[in-house]
Length: 241
Ligand SMILES: Nc1ncnc2c1ncn2[C@@H]1O[C@H](COP(=O)(O)OP(=O)(O)OP(=O)(O)O)[C@@H](O)[C@H]1O
Image (cartoon, rainbow, N blue to C red):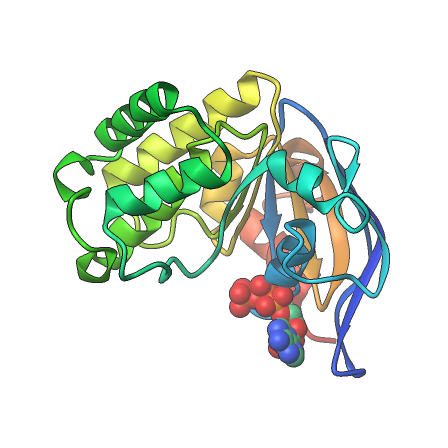
């Protein structure tokens, strides 16, 4: 379970990027975090993963507190950031082994997982190449594979479908469903309403740092007036006053 309790983050003393966020994500759920540009999605995810420190409030992952017990909390999740341009000097396989080392995944298990992930994402022939030569989508895939090498309980994915080709995107969605169905939390951000609509058990809509809605897709639809599209609800909740 992932829990945000009254979490606030202010940049430079003025920009309230996340405003008193309280949100619980339960095992078995795919939770989509929706919001327009600058809404506070990435800031929330960076606090959740320990990259940024919140100004107030508490974040726990499977009961482990990110501020007071960061090493244990970080073992609980795999994280894919919104920008996959990292470790460019490494070859794909070196990066995956590096991630395996960090999370202390034993050699034989690691080999099996890397083979299986490479097959799923069509990356077998690219593992020996330097990441600097990868396309955006291939970088996205290698970062995703690295995040999954230790088979984390929670998946935290910032805009994971961006740049993936249809087959990889389909594969990832299947994997997300499968992982949640095994009793894990999958938390991801997206701008794309249709993705959220098809994939998520629950969604949260954030705007200007404030959580405007959190609930099931069905509850979201019920909020809509008759004949109003989900897009209209989304626009209504995120419009500028
Ligand atoms: N390092 C920073 N310093 C100052 N302000 C920042 C910083 N990072 C983000 N912000 C501001 O905080 C707010 C939330 O940004 P954030 O990146 O969390 O939004 P987002 O929902 O992820 O947006 P996008 O969908 O465009 O990625 C925005 O007003 C943004 O300009």
